[in-house]
Image (cartoon, rainbow, N blue to C red; front, side):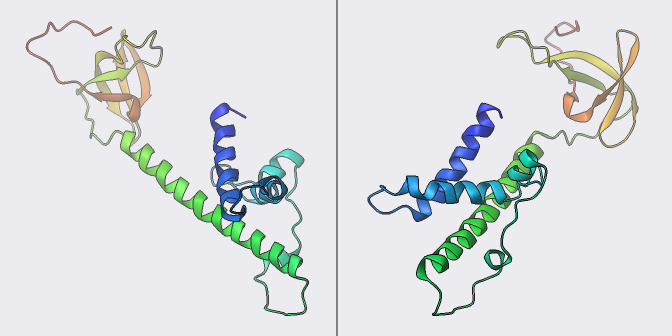
Length: 185
């Protein structure tokens, strides 16, 4: 697990605990196993698997009564009823947060998506993924578009070779009359 993923899981666990911890904040350690159970038994939108299933190869067995909405019965033991309520609330919170997170990630991805319509003979710049340091140019080129394969890929001429690249790795090149027409490195 990467540091970012670990920090994200800690953030989610903190959100779970924040809803149930006492005002004096002294019972979080008692609630942590329940929060971990909810986290490990909730399907993540990015993987579409429960973390438990990824670790043990099968979904966690949750009693059917815990999955169903509780029927208001007054002969239940208060602790069992409270536990069911906490599980259901935590699962709902997890679902809502994962849905919201997915929408945020989609907006972030869409913001970085290239929506320019490229045509044959357009001049483009190619994103340099081998950037050596922070001050190195982000783009190389210009290169000529030889073919537009679909809405996602273009074929360009690079060093007299045909190279297929994803549309998100290129942008239109606009010639600056104040600069030399030499290739940007």
